[in-house]
Image (cartoon, rainbow, N blue to C red; front, side):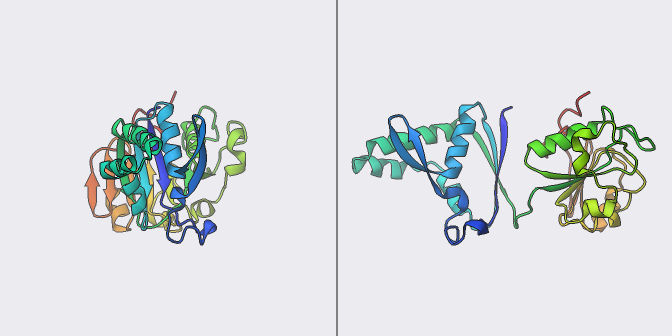
Length: 259
């Protein structure tokens, strides 16, 4: 694994008033560095630890009021020189190591206008429509992968029996409307007739639908204000079409589901 997505778009209201002016990701944390204790921003520590284990491609998801994060992750040689001129050699060396990690990494910034959370709905758990067999279904792996990436996942399948879904039993909801209610995104894993029209997804909080079976009509979803991502075809909606789904960061997007 060489890529990491770091989400930093939240408002930090639970840490208010400390986060009113300072992003929560930039709050200072005490950290042992060699023989001394130093203070670093939380997000810098996360970045450095990921870099230490071999991650070299980073995507930071930020929102309004997070300019301080981008500034901090931009090398500042003038500040380095000022540290040395003021006799802060050890602090300058620590900062230089951080800047060396930045130079060794590829960083992408994604601006999210409003916090969207991590709630995802997975539609279909059985191996194929018209059956209740969920054993070895790719959807089971998908649910686990989304969960490992920090998502709160709900699953809807009209017929999947207990056998094969033991690991996700507590996440299964039989009613599609309840499953989609308030979700930030939806993933179609099995093409049941219950999940066919854009109107079925209007109870979602978000407007992103991932069609792994390539059964949805992009025109209909675009007209309904939805963003439809079809694996192997592209991304549709929000007024534009994007050709490749390989960069959406979705499990299975780059190489299919595991067999």
